[in-house]
Length: 261
Image (cartoon, rainbow, N blue to C red; front, side, top):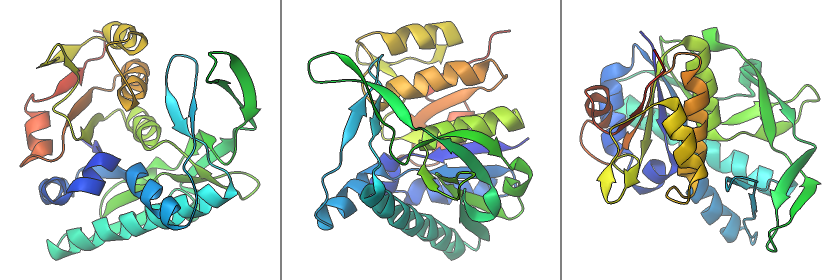
């Protein structure tokens, strides 16, 4: 069975070595999607650009991608992509690094407008920039061998490069493959009251995502996991900075969002 592994930006930016070493054991059955937003921020600042973020209804936050941001995003993501491939090569694991634009593996429709919540708490419609919503994925092109490492960059029908949320890419691939999804972040899972929540139903995940107990990117992860569960996908959120994180996640560590029976 295929496993989709999402290497979160927090892992990529801090220390991906343990996750990559573990990934080598699953090279024949895995598809990898990576993030790297924190590194994008660093590159943008070095280029004299200020990262901008949008807050959407429900509290989900996303990057506003104008053309200059898109340039920094694509450059940085492909740098990360090739470094992951090179690290795998050092472990004698052949891997193919690509963006979703390559051979039109990942197609998307540009978001012309998006609804945001401004600093006064009012909802407004603003330009969507160069972000997109996935319309088509060539999943056959992502199957091993060799191990595919995918950067979350899509292409539109008009030939535009688009920034796609990495978690969303991973969820969409897992849903189409009916596979397990392991999301590696820098936390041991969803933590409520100082403890890791071991298991969640899709409904419980949605309720927590809407609550004030969950902040930042975890909201998006829980919402997407609940949606993916409708397709039979089990999502596991675990710490990619520990030894053998994929093996431990598959063995029960972390937070598991389980499809309804």
